[in-house]
Image 1: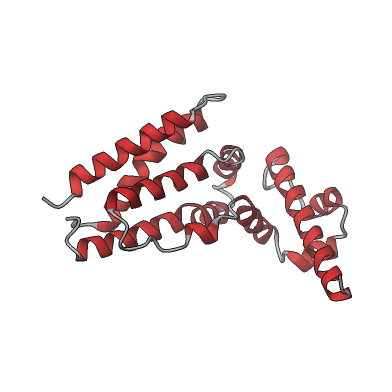
Image 2: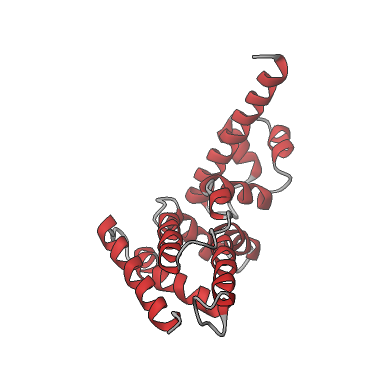
Length: 206
């Protein structure tokens, strides 16, 4: 490994240590009480080093979102237009369920809900990196299917939210509100199958 590669690897390791320390601090103390100095101390780096990677606490929180959802590039990839509506909806439903059942998502949501009145940027960052990629991918796919007359949808953005909402309402929100409520793989699969069938029954071309 050359000197330049070595430095890049050290920088990567420090960035990851900062993000891990910040995530632990935000979950333990909340966004407001978790200071930059405290995160740097927990990550065993200087405050100056932390600022080289992240310009602000909000930027640091955005980095956490990106770390938690490293599959962003996968979730941002267009759905192949030749994929049948049933297959496409099932695929994106499974990917969305995977996001919602990530063990860190519920604790992060609780932090954001508690802090959002004072720090609305937290909710914005969560939406931008969490749900928005799914909305955009599904919306783009549905536009193609409607143009090809494979589906009949008057309001595509509403239909997109309806589909993800059918999954969200069963898989995520009850578990956020009821501690230790579990949902297994077979239940998740059933939720998605039912959501796909309901969506196609409403919007499938006759």
